[in-house]
Image (cartoon, rainbow, N blue to C red; front, side, top):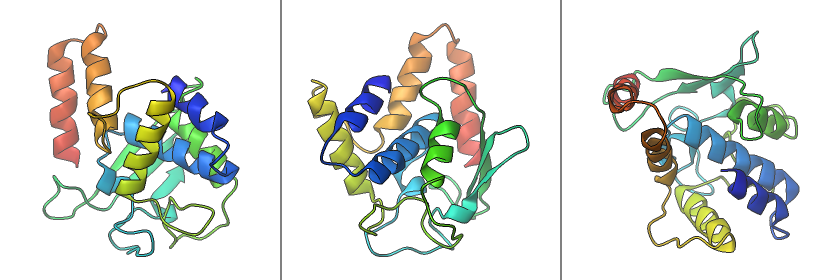
Amino acid sequence: MRQLKGALADDPHIASKDKLMLWSAFTLAFFGFLRSSEFTSPSSTHFNPQVNLARSDISFTSNRSLLLQLKASKTDPFRMGCSITHSLSGRSVCAVQAMHRYLAHQLPGNSTPLYFFSTGQFLTRDKVTSILCFQLQRLGFATESYASHSFRIRLQLLLQQSSIGKRFILFLSILHLILN
């Protein structure tokens, strides 16, 4: 993720505000185990605030944690929604810090999509995939196996490679399915 952050920051073809938006989306997706449909819009011009992630779905707690309210998920057939809390890590790769920086450059408006480009177009799954693959190619990674769901898979792989036990990883996966 640090390499991806550096690649985004150094890309001269992406507007500064868009870099903040993309980094916020990438870190939120990665640390929140989010599916692309949970943080993107279905098209670059269509947005439904009743279904898609909006600015109003983000809040911050008194202890500086980020609270994300998901309206629906693939594993939530009754559309009950759930809350996901992200804690401030204090590290260079932090979803809370990325969100604060991104929102500091946005105009207030609760019924707008959370993620949109400086051109006004909304962030879509296809855009996430194309930008992610382009940045990874710039870093020298083979991108044939990367897609918008790669954030979920990559976090699971990192957990498996760490000293965290397999039972705890299974518990996190089951908990995520139950909550989403």
